Length: 147
View 1 (cartoon, rainbow, N blue to C red):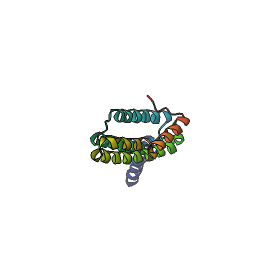
View 2: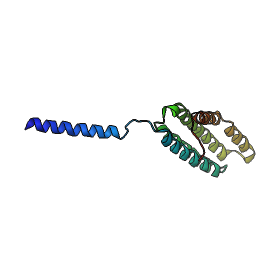
View 3: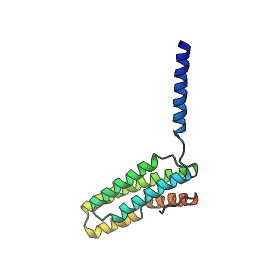
View 4: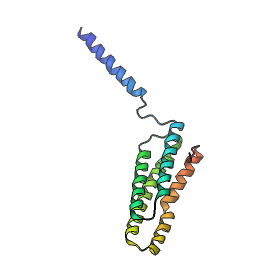
């Protein structure tokens, strides 16, 4: 009787372990699943950036959106052909968010004539170049960044 109870418990544990393993656990996303997430993130972030103004409030909102997008992408397990580019994109987005924070501070304190220079620095930011490189790496791996 005791042996039967032990076997039953082991069977329950084995079935539970198989169920968890079948859910994917640490499995990487498929190409298609990653493409869907990537397209959604790029579209949402692009819309936020395009709608932003040149004031501190909207720069801070965009900064939060960029950070949130980086956080979501960092949590993914992309396919192996996109893993390096995804990591690069996350790092570049986080660096860009810091640049946006600097711009927000400038927008609070600088006159309009000097704010244009800050906008220009933001556009030439090394983070922007790194984002473009990561996007190019993803394209070479067969991913599209447009819907």
